[in-house]
Image (cartoon, rainbow, N blue to C red):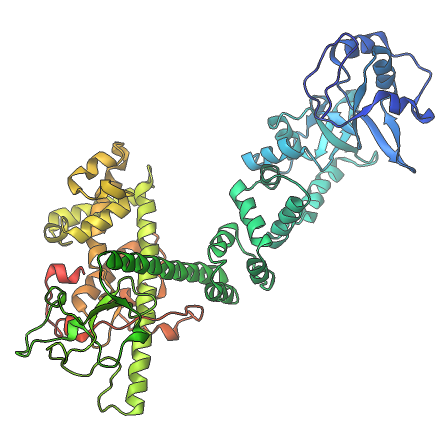
Length: 582
C-alpha cells in the first residue's frame, strides 16, 4: 500500500486502502469539479492526509470515475498530495453506525477466527443500514459484522441502504431471510477454494485467517492437492474429508496399499469412524515396520546373520520349537552359538525378527512335530482351514494392537488435562479408592513391574532417559495439585493396561480367561468414562467371540501369525505374572 504524504512532509500510517495518483484522477474531466474544498477539510488533509477513501469505479475503457469524494480530491490537489486512498465500493465509518437494538441473534459468536478473517481481508459483505429520525444510521442487517469489525480494528464497513418503504416488521423479516438464505461452503468446497487461493498467490497465513483455520490445515490442503496420488484419492471420493484426515492421508503418500485402504473406508456408511480406524490400523502397521527395521539393524550391527523367509529351506525351524536329543527345550540363549542360527522376519507386520535354525538335524537338535511350512498328514481342507484361522488371528492381532495405541492415547490425553469435570473426578477417585482399599486391581503385584513402568511413562508423556528410572517419575510431571487424581489414575491405568494383552481377545484354543475377564471389566470402566470401544474391544467387554472378517473392517489388509501353542499355558492354568505381561 502507498503511504500518503502531504506537502508539509507529514506522513500518515499506512492506509488500509489501495491508492490512485491524484493527478491521474484529475486528468479525467468527469472527476474534476470547479469547486473549492472547505477550509476545515483542507486543513485536515494538510495535516493528516486523506483519511476517508474516495469511492471510485472503473468505467468503459478502465477509466477511474469518482462516485463520491470530489471535495476530498480537490483538497488533496490543493495540499499537493501525490496519491489518495480509494475504494471500489461504498463504505461508511463504523463509528457513524448504531446497532439494531433488537437484533434477532442472541449470540453473535464474535470468535477469534471471525475477527482474524475481518482483520486480514476486511468485511466483504455489505451491512444494510437505514436512516432513522434524528439522523441515526441503524444497522438492520449485519450486526455481527458491525461488532466483529470493531474488534478487528476496522474503521469502515461496506454498506447498502435499506429500502425506504421497509417498515419495522420488514426489518425483522430481513434478519430471518438473510440468515436462512446463507449456505456455508461444504468441507470439499472450502478445501478447493483454499487451494485455488494458494495457486493464485495467496500466502498460507492470509488464507488461514480468511478461512478461520490453522495454518497447518492450509499447508495440508496444499500438500494434498499438489500430490497426484493424494489428490486423486480425495477427488474420487464423495466423502467430505476433515483437515486432520487429510493430514493423516498425506502420511501415506508413498504407500499405495495404505491409500487404497483408507479411501475404501470412505465408502462406508459410517465413513468418519471407519476412516479414523483404518488410519490407526495403517499407522500401527507402519510403526511395526519401523521397529522391525530397527531390530534388524541392531542384529546386523551385532554380527548376526539375517535372512528373508524365502531364503530358508523347509528344514529351517524356529528356535522355540527345538529340543535337545533328551527332549529338553532349547532357549534362544542356548542356541546363540549354533552355526545354523539365522534371524528372520516371519510376518510383514512383526515388530521383531525371530531366531531360526537352518537345519536342526545337521546341528544336532531334535524338532517335535512338523518343520517350517509342513502340515504333516493333513488333507487339503484341513490345511486351508488352518491357513484361514492363522489369517484371522493375524488380522485380529493387528486390530488389537491398533486399538491399544488408540486407547492409550485417549488415556494419555485424559492424564494431561489440568481440570476434569467434577463427575469424572469423582468417578476416578472412587476407582482409586477401590483399588487401594479393596485390593481388587492387583496393585501390589504389578505396580512396579517393568511392563507397567513402560506403559506409565507413555501415559505420563515421559520419554527418553527420563523414562528409565521409575523413582524419578515424580520429578518429571507437573506439580499442580489439581492433577493429583489424574496422576494416580495413570498409575492404576498402567497396571490394567499391562494385563490387556493380545491373548485377551482370543476365544479359540489359545483363550486366556485370566487376561480376558479383567480386561473386559477394564474396558467397561473406560466406556463409562467416555471412551468409545472399537469392535474388538467391545467383543472382549461383552465376552463374545471376535471374528475380524465378520466386522465392517474391509479396509484392513494385514493379518498376524497365531500365538504358538507351546508358549501358552494349558487351558485353565494361571500363568506367572511376568508371562501374562509379555
